[in-house]
Image 1 (cartoon, rainbow over the protein chains, first blue to last red):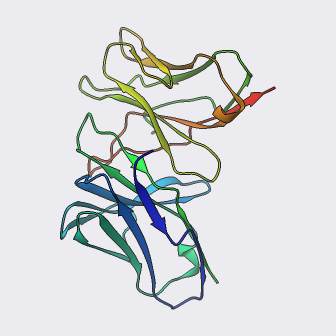
Image 2: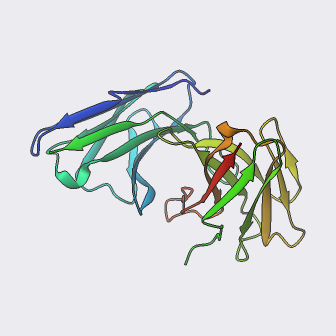
Length: 114
Length: 110
């Protein structure tokens, strides 16, 4: 299995509080991604990174920010959590991007915003 | 419209081959066919991908028709641990990211 660790695995928080999720990889892959998964919506890309300090928005980026100060770490921050951000969050990595890429996913973080 | 069509669900007997079909009639010439699966409560897992030729690895075989409009993922000897949602993917979004659709829920039964 690819060396991807997500923390925390579970978190319950209150509306309006800031939350940071961490993704740590030991594969030295250049690309890292944050997805959320909700019933009826499948996997949706929030943000991704193509290198240290290089990030870009995905299809559902509103309300989220990311940072990547080291190759191995990709942080997802909810500045002020809302109930609509209750979801399962997955981090993924890939060595390359393009038509022949392979994504490897972490085990996920279950976030509940009350 | 979705670029791939998969059955919503399928059953397979333990020990038998599981054949999961996928239609992708609008696939472009340079688009790969990817298969991932997601076991309950876990992150998606890469299985296999191919462009034109059939592919085989330690997990599965991928058979792509000559016209590339459909493919079949084969798990040669399904086990209970193969129960999962299987995603056939060809589509990419505006950011060139793979787009996961609904998938096929495979239930392997004893």
